[in-house]
Image (tube, rainbow, N blue to C red):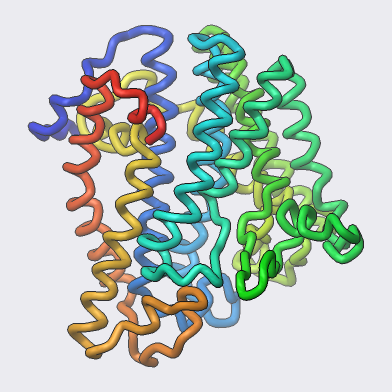
Length: 401
């Protein structure tokens, strides 16, 4: 990418050639890329033609399949890097300070998922008889559990080893159902058995992101952070090897069509790459984190030109998440009111998508991509403003966004 200049970029601090800034730049760059892909997928959710499942080999086509498939990298990379960021913070915090921050921020994320994200992001209603636990919810609980592990002085290698172990073994529990656990049925449903759960009369909660594998990914990311104590060349080589090995394992295990994913493949690339995300299977995690780590090993240590725009998004991921969903959803409601005089299906009380919508609603991929670019253009100056606030203010609450 050639040099690009924007006056708002002056808010970003000058990049120093130092161990700390170089490594954070590469992490933020990867995080920024997956954030942009996430926004594309959410734009497709609200503006795309959802009558065709992008992952259905019998109905999809290459552009639609790839548009959906690349979004699969977002949640695993985002959660993994959240763990890595926690390890990087451990270099400048005591275990007590890091534990307090992880627990308090984790619970704050859970609160945001069940309030702001639910009401102003996905549903546009306050009818709490239906709620969903999605990626922010999963990251929040995972952070809180990691905070407890830090308080108990669990070494990073042990935490990382536990995470990797769960990633490789959790599919052995695919046959277990919540009802087998008696009074503790609700716990297994939250951890791995993804189904609606009535936790109070008239209140249904759907754990779309079952916690067990996502916690494992965050713990693995925390252990991965230890590589950032090494010199640059050795770190890059090890990260590249990890990425290549993970990708190779995915291809090999998937080829035998046995363990690693509850969804077997039949023939063709579409079927081979169509893996279980809810909960994320071993193969799904290997397919996404493997290439992501290989890319991370080759990202620049210092950013310049147009890459600084992407790094900026990666520095304020939660802020971006909290504003981009209401913006996309709000535009969808305005468009529906203008085109159809009604937007009931976009403010559905039981949960978004339950009420009937016009059969001709939705744009083609070209329209989705155009709206995505427009959303990023609007969100960009807000993220720059928030970056400035974080850099110039000492307010504690800014660390929680």
